[in-house]
Length: 383
Image 1 (spheres, rainbow, N blue to C red):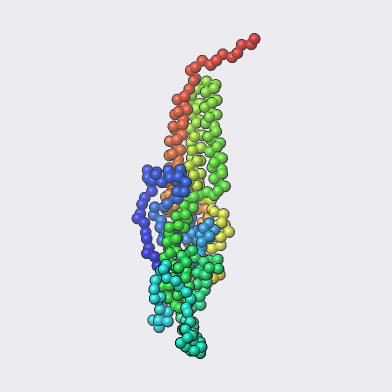
Image 2: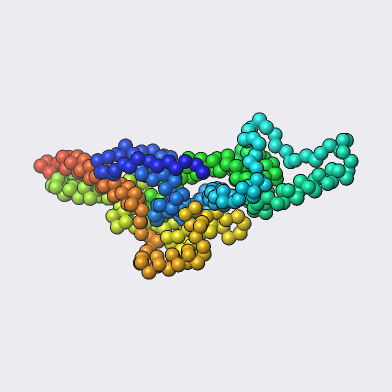
């Protein structure tokens, strides 16, 4: 199992992380980060909506189309724990592989003994004996299914591994069921989840609006910013008092906050109320009961988090019933994770403060430009 890496605790403040907010607003490709959340927090099930383990699985299934990584990750943890509980006699039937995977080694299927030195009967007897020993290994059928599911090139759940690593697992899975044959593959999948999937998931999870609301935000930007030149032109051309231009503040404020909200994918109204727009794919995927981690796949190998694995079905049902009694049913739109809430409050203040600063500058410039004391030109005299 990969070592549990935990980030040091960091606080959120309206006076901190302005550089990150600026990058989020004005740098394409920059991904939002949560200071105190690590991939292990999500995998251990300690995070809440909208960055819970269940949402992570939905994200991998529908956005990255790599849910098999999570399936294999949990299957290996569970399988390793089950293998360690076997007796020494059972373990002796499946010895660890003789070597570690290496790119310079070619792994082919086991070869039959050379027919030049042994007659056909001896070859058949040795092969039959070897097959019997392999069939007697613990979890043999499960390992065969895992090899076909995650390491066969024709499987739709084939893992994204280097070819030598896939061949290594395929080769040694025919000889032993020891969990060490999957260790390198498991570490590789963990690194993919950590360095690729997790940052994208956090970036996606901290947004509280869907794409349709982006269109509304940018429509608000156009509406508010168009009023700025109109107000300046009308008041200046009619020699009106400069104080009529104070209305520039509100149009500048709402226009600028709409720009920042659209760039950050963060609605200030929803952020203030701690709600979100649920991604559309979650409505179809949300068949797993909220607050619990069930089986991730209905067909084929199934992986469960370690803390749920030892519980029987009856115990899990009892725990669910108790949770239902103790907790009120919570909406899918509610943001529950404390780190996401802290980030949301910080982003809300950053957007509001930046909007106030921008609109104040625009208003000061607009008010300072005036011709109210100039004598308006006389209307043309009739001929």
